[in-house]
Image (cartoon, rainbow, N blue to C red):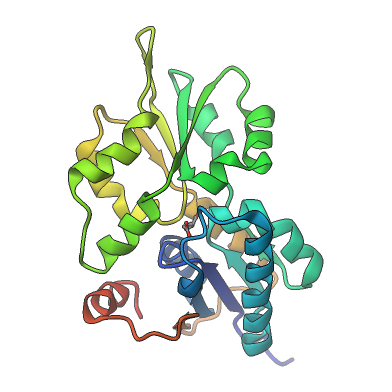
Length: 261
Ligand code: DGL
């Protein structure tokens, strides 16, 4: 019987944030052929109108499907997932794994029942996110914090031009609430760019909290969907594409090398 070849997995984000998801998925499927697609020509997604983004994401992903015929697509972007996942699933037959704010596990693990969801302005204002809160956050106070700048700071961090501690602190401080002696103890990283700044966040946080990164759960979901194609004993491949067609500058190239590109 001919062996099934390892799967081709497309990992998509508006920029380099989805690399934080890619590295976990790659650990789960080291045999896969990965294509990482950054729609940097459309970055940032977080403060753009919904209808424009839905059309753009469908175009970019449709063209990538035609080029690479992926077996599975990971939308490694909360903003794109909460806005466009339903449309993508209706348009294309390829299975999609999305990235949505990890509100359920955050509320379950919070001892003080005070959590924050830190995402782009688009992600925190979408009905999708509000529905997750209604469904999974009863008895838990949820602060929704939309950051206009953190995704850009994360891109800059990787490109070797980091934002200052004061700039970073200004974006994350609204997450930290102290109400009647009850502190926020869990913060959902609801943008895939933010784990790139995790060390910076820990340094400027007014008190220690759990930072919830959804990447391991996404990797488990991918492994589960591909369980019919057991991991082969071959090393996979990985390529990266930027919709701008630009050559990454040397500092970013070095950072990408740390992800195996
Ligand atoms: N990485 C994206 C997310 O998870 C968004 C960054 C942006 O383009 O604004 O939401």
